[in-house]
Length: 487
Ligand code: AMP
Image (cartoon, rainbow, N blue to C red; front, side, top):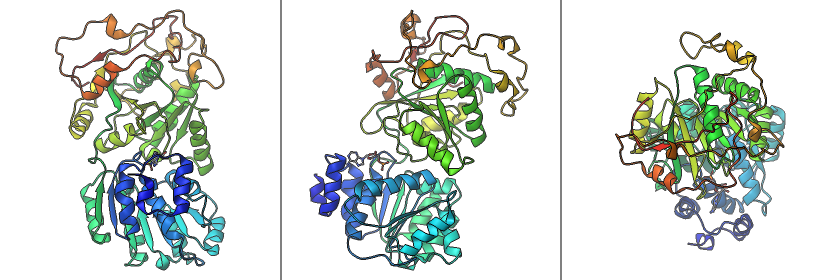
């Protein structure tokens, strides 16, 4: 169905044409008519499905009639993170370029007074994170009694972040008769309860089963040792060995790990930026911009910081930590394989992660294949500063363990990730490990994703690998071993 059949306004259709979208995505096709008919909508969709435009386009059409009054926004969009809120604002800029609407962003970490000034001038679309919104409301600087349409986006993430009480308060501050659009990727019981309480006879639009993984993503598990330095070593070697690498998001479970891993990768010469909740807004924006414009090839992030970010063309996702919640795995790997492209997601699995991996496999309904242990010498040469990092993650501490490597030459090994440098070709091209070793006896049917990998070709444009750490030129590659097992 073409966009022109969706009853969107001429201005919106012109903006969609400029954006170059040939047709609506399934969530857009299914949701837009109901939004325009003023129905409440419960949208179950992952990011990457075009769900933002599914509410922004009809909102723009509806907002063409009427005017904003001071301190009384006409519509309100709630987002769990500042980055997501900023991203939705960008969508209004993009699709609303033919409109003259006042769009305001009310997020933490930026000047309260500037935001107050905008509210005073009258706002058609208010995009907010819950905490800062309630601050303005409690100070009497914002009246929500004029809100005609409320969007609650990424509701399951709001739940994870403890925002549900705030959402309930906000829902009680906006008129009962408002229209509500509610988007979530999964439907845990608490979210179900909220939808029953705050949506009125909603139309349910579901574009893919909740918590299913995107078919175009190759998923693999990579075995590692128990200690943090083992994991960092495995990560570095996995990144270097990755096929068709362009850029990657690396997920950690905790903010502290994000910062620590970031420092480590930078010391090892990788061009990496970090995104976590302890950074101030300008640092977060700078990190994201640097990753988006290709200056930085690696973005290290926590789930909260990265949730829903629209970063097109991410070739790889690395789970440095196996996520505690299987749902998070689905969200993480959904950062790659977007818009019809293939992507690859590697999960580094230590001895204590078996249960979490089993939960993930249960949720996605398929086993994830193991990548063969990477060939080549272990890259345990941590920098002196790293050796000083607190070893709180693992038991027993490893402070002095690799002292022997410390004085080795620290020639830059990750040139492919360093800015403005062209990697030099390596004297020995990598042998796919699959050719080097026979498959194990206990073979099982590979997961569908593994079959995708079998069909993939090594790109001639794939970046050259660096020399191995210990003088070797033995370059690792993965062996896809369709064997199920746990670390
Ligand atoms: P979202 O799920 O909202 O994060 O959107 C994911 C990506 O899909 C964004 O980069 C959009 O620009 C893009 N997109 C949205 N609608 C369409 C469409 N109809 N056709 C192609 N791409 C789209």
